[in-house]
Length: 142
Image 1 (cartoon, one colour):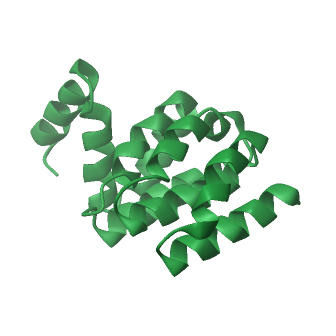
Image 2: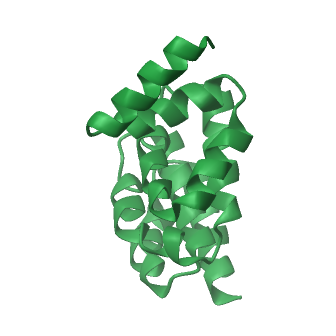
């Protein structure tokens, strides 16, 4: 990425809603996982900016896996725990991939509040979502 393009992205990210999520998406698409981790480590509240990636069923596998790596880094920690209500909403998404990912992150949160969002997913239409919801509930018990 050219320096001018990078600066434009940073300005856009700082200037409005959704900009940081777009910036993270581009970084992850280009293999910039370490950069995303560095930014979120410096400002843990920015973990929430990865939620649009989780909620995007069309996100590339590269981007989704990158977002997952960042969420996993915050397993059981407050920056992930505060996202439980938003992840709970994503666990009701129309797309099974989004629901499955949200269930996984709810389990990683290790928050007792996640149980209320995971339990209904045990009867989800998708076998994968049901399995991940069950695994996540078990993880909450550990």
